[in-house]
Image (cartoon, rainbow, N blue to C red; front, side):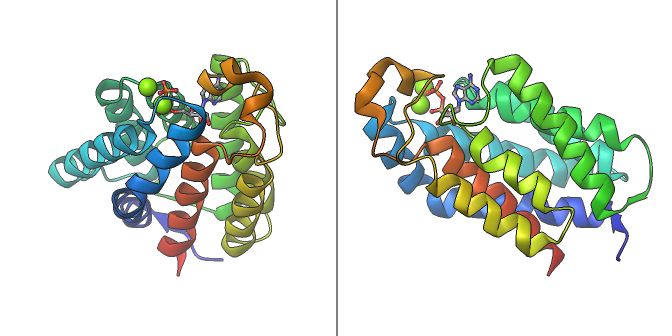
Amino acid sequence: DAVLDAEFFLRWMNALARAVDREAARLTELDAAIGDADHGTNMRRGFTAVAAALEKDAPDTPGAVLTLAGRRLISTVGGASGPLYGTLLRRAGKALGDEAGVSRAQLAEALRAGIAAVARLGGAKAGDKTMLDALEPAAAALDESFAAARAAAEDGAAATVPMLARKGRASYLGERSVGHRDPGAASSALLVGALEEAAR
Ligand code: ADP
Ligand code: MG
Ligand code: MG
């Protein structure tokens, strides 16, 4: 298996910034149904800032790329998704340490550490109709392959449609949150899709 270096992580973050830019209207539309119609705007603002910071700094280890990206998300995104995705990437970056190259298995393990930190911060668990419903299955499937992780994230996002939201703004709607895809699960599928794109 290929060693994943800082270049790979920069490709991942740049592919994600492009995907979020392309899909911003769809993410905001999903959030209009069960939230406050800003998820696409929040994600675009955050990942545009991430791409700009990485362009300026170009950190030379995988851990430093994710740590910087996470910090930028926290400082630029006002909504819940900023601190949550910021925590995911910062914690995963910390788990990767200062190694110049990491394996896919190490990345999967680091993402699991990041996901656990997101769950602690937001108090959510699988089945609560949040980003975790896409991220958790994706991190598990990443042990198999990048393509399996992407498919698992997409399936996980689709599986949020019939769920009742128990965390975040959508939870204020109670039963009325049923029948809509969670916007954060949709953006998490973009995050994992960009990871697979970087690996191609
Ligand atoms: P806000 O709700 O503050 O407007 P966004 O619209 O950017 O923030 O993000 C909403 C998404 O954040 C939700 O769709 C959900 O996936 C995720 N989210 C919200 N609260 C939590 C939480 N407590 N734990 C995990 N994810 C959450
Ligand atoms: Mg919102
Ligand atoms: Mg908001």
